[in-house]
Image (cartoon, rainbow, N blue to C red; front, side, top):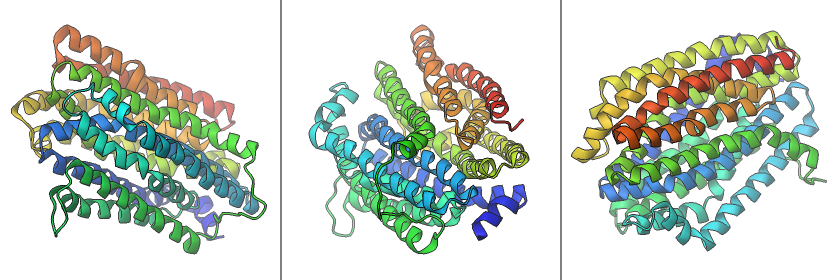
Length: 447
């Protein structure tokens, strides 16, 4: 099979670049539409920008469940493909699709029944609560598109078809980018819907991306085809998926908890501080997307090689991917150090947001290099079937050390000192990732 030859025999640098570049492009475009959302919403008001930032933790929880489940299925499918178990691949894919639908149903029900108290809790009952509720209601009730899109893209990635995965994601992202100004400001005869329009544009893009990904799987991905005849949810398959997927879900959920906690800390100082943190996080996500693309490519490469018993190829993959990721982190660091004012200027910042944000970006930037090590090793260990390294590495980076230290530093020296906490958390997480990955590879017989 062409897929098998590609994953087994292609020179590693060529394989890594061939699989990761489409993922990088697709993730950059996906992240770009989050930034475009914020740019357009910021033109409404800084309060509107803060409202969407306050909504971000719930969106991250949805992404956590969608991505975590799909990472688990990606790792499983890659191993089964490496072992040439065609029928098991089909049943595993069907299981992943059913789990995606079940996961989305949780948020649909929450959006129908509980969006008001959720939004008011996030905004602490402030002036932004109404806009936060309007934005969240649309994103939650119509969230099934993002769950199906994410799962169907991982089917394509598991068989090495990252270009097709990129196509489906770009369809959704471009749709959102085009619809944003139309829905927000009322162009081409549409009513001006403000933050509600931003949410509508987002979910339409997600559903079109999902439809595209499903069609590409149906007609262009013969290696991974869902099998419905005689299908039932098997506890062993679900358990295998969530052995990797659950730590990834918890990892992603920590990002949501971190955003919620940091918003709570920053609301004690100003709306501008909340708006800045939302902008920073989206800028950081955009610059980290190439590293995420490399990491996502590592999962099927490592998983396939592990399934095929080719341990030398696993080590070669890590040695190839890690330096590239560090190089990307250096580029992101230089960019944040060189033009912080221009980056923040994209979001119509107030003078207060600029005075807070410019020095903060310069404090944060050098920590990206440590983050790249933690991220890549976590993804690689997921390919070996161990999601704990990724989970604990992220916990140290974003929650266990970052939030308490940010609160302490802000309380002691002012909100501008909060960002130094990232130096402690990122360095500690990188050290942990190196030591834990070495232990996992020894246990797996890779080294």
